[in-house]
Length: 225
Image (cartoon, rainbow, N blue to C red; front, side, top):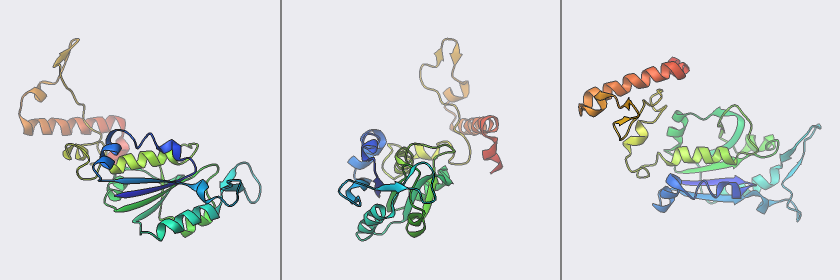
């Protein structure tokens, strides 16, 4: 998978992609992540990429020309399965969407900043608008990092045990069950006996029941879906 990210703050994304699972995916050449600094496409020698809002109001808006110039350059080199804009008013990121995007070959992600981007960019280029939650961040970079991490970890060969991703929370609209490791007893708290039994079918049933109960208590909305 190749992921291109267009941003006016590329330094914010260096660290998230230089460690852990996303780094492993790049080292294995299972994923390529390329950052594109929007200021390279500024409209003048002063590095301008934003302007005041038509109609008045507080805040600045990313202009059409720098984004379009960057997008046109990238789109001339390859086609993209999805052109994504990270925005608070987009579709809320859920595991089902992550699963679909993990099947893509090329993704292009635009990070908003200030008050957002000129609406004409959204109309002309964007195929998917995604939000990581009902709150506002300073820019789309951290949201893009969340999206990339969620997608890349699903690529075949990235995780040491590919079954691990299939048992994650939300994969079957259930939260994950409680998990334990050694020691079997700690300060009077013991690991449930069933997990020490070696009876895999019964353990699977126990885990499913625990996941169902935890979802009932904490996220009953998932069961309604």
